[in-house]
Image (cartoon, rainbow, N blue to C red; front, side):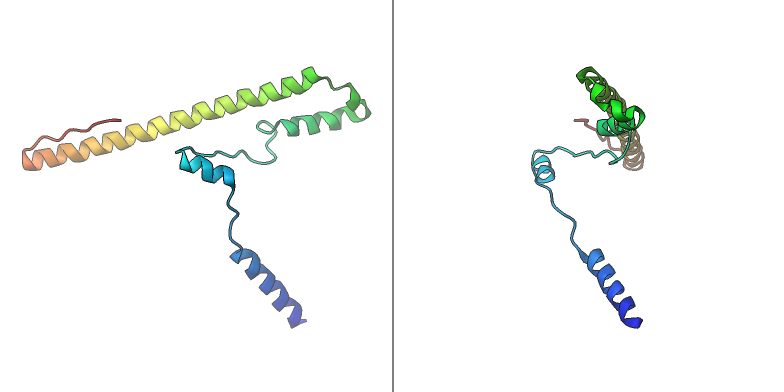
Length: 124
């Protein structure tokens, strides 16, 4: 019985030690200064196939009646959701940048008061 536990522990250790895969798309994106965003794999609003699987369950044998118009509609819905998501991502980045800028200005202002020098903050 102890032998099985050892095998299971060894297998778990092997899985934990396994290096994460490196994808060419990520490497190329990083080389050009881009970020890759991934959506949750089974998220119905961000994965159009999930909408179609849901539709398939509802339609059952009527699957052959799904038109290209329905596929396009599901795809467009996902595009809208992606757009909404990216707006929130950009808003979050803008808020974080504003906070960082305010913190940097406060540091420079404090240093200026202590040393009587002027500092300038340049935004790119």
